[in-house]
Image (cartoon, rainbow over all chains, first blue to last red; front, top):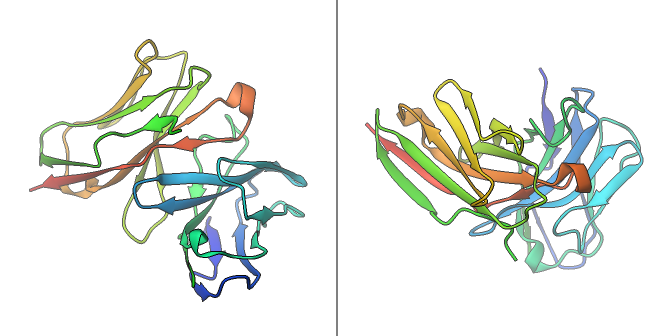
Length: 115
Length: 114
């Protein structure tokens, strides 16, 4: 089944404790992206990757890191999480055609709480 | 500064009637626009898109209209069905200049009543 998977689905952590949220897609998509969803703010893009080893900042990259060492995986790293990073996170991927930002396939989301 | 705005947080429509969801943008460099639908506890799913060279795109019950001079787009759902009840996000990209960056609006929660 074609899908985007994220792990963990739920995470409660403390301020400053490094964490990684994994994202994997099995559709051989070139483009991958991370978003956070907050009430009243909609979805905001954190980072995106047009291809392996190519990553770029979205609208709200501060406090996050990403890497794209292989096509299928795009982990989101919070080196020192803070309470304002409490949010619902989505990973997405899309094929290169017609253009990468078109039909993105989203994962089920990761609910992160930082205390 | 919110470059893509959905000013109506919610909309309630009777089944069978038309639903019109609106979206305004400020960046004249945006050249692609998309609508996504989101059910609770699920990731968003792609609905329909339009490029800036068009002013209308239709897919079944869903039609997106783009008014570039007013920097406004709208999504029409006709006829509305209870299964359409969800949060709808519009999104915009200046793909030609900014590659994969995508800006979403705040979302509009549509409720279709039987």
